[in-house]
Amino acid sequence: MKALVYQAAGKRAVEDRPRPVIQAPGDAIVRMTKTTICGTDLHILKGDVATCKPGRILGHEGVGVIEEVGSGVTAFHAGDHVLISCISSCGKCEYCRRGMFSHCTTGGWILGNEIDGTQAEYVRTPHADTSLYPLPPGADEEAIVMLSDILPTGFECGVLNGRVSPGSSVAIVGSGPIGLAALLTAQLYSPAEIIMIDLDDNRLHVARQFGATHTVNSADGKAADTVMALTSGRGVDTAIEAVGVPATFLLCEAIVGAGGTIANVGVHGVKVDLHLESLWSRNITITTRLVDTVTTPMLLKTVQSRKIDARRLITHRFKMDQIMEAYDVFGQAVESRALKVVIAFG
Image (tube, rainbow, N blue to C red; front, side):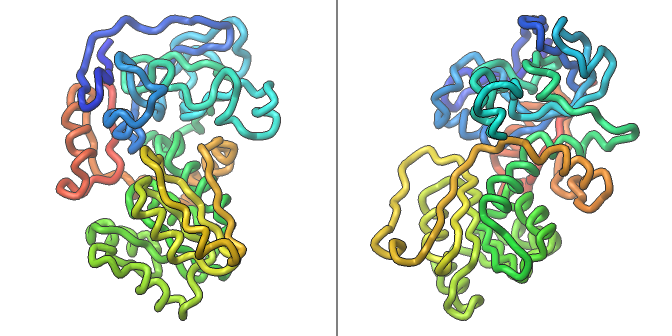
């Protein structure tokens, strides 16, 4: 089968690999029909994710059709159309019982990280009963792919951890796919203001179309001043960091108001300064989280009912034999104006 493989920092290639096989009773083998590329895949290619070793098939998102299940799988059968969660959960360990599926002792974020992932014609998914979701009849596969990772990530790590509430003020630093997913799902809680901050005017234009009340281009270095002016000097109730670089986290520190929350979503590869000299007395909460996908069933219903139009996040479409081009487009998002790219098989 064809697969996109991480070879070394800065190096990727399409390789021929053997089809995966059942290794444990809870496994399923899924024939992929749609997948996508995540910003985390780009972090891996930069060498920022030490747990992902060279030779790994990348990808942790997608939908497909089950080809085979292990003897312990009871909820799914060959021929079922399924959504693959980016998080694998056994459902039984201490962390899973606490709803922290990302810390599952035999799962978590392993697809495309510690085991081979979904950017291949076939993938082995551990803990199938609790890590796959049946697709409703007539489901829009492209929209559903957005539920593998970015929608639950933006919602859980940004909106829920950020304690977004009716009438509150929210700033989302980073108007890429994750930031826009946080924007879409934040509106479920009717905040009064959603301020989107980015360096790219095109992405800010998209954010306004998606429902942002204000947009701020941070290229001039005055974004914090602009946000403070928009909030009458108070700062925002929730600052969501959706990039993963020091400058964007520092901006969140500068714009969060007293009693507010900084919700980190971005994947950070280097240290960030924490300015407690200015935050210690202001009742600030800082949250971190790896998505647990506990909200995926709810979001699946929300997307199916069109309360959220997840297709709006898709800008480019490719076939599997174009996946190298897809990476080039996604990795040069400013020039290509890419948000999410969908890769189809067959």
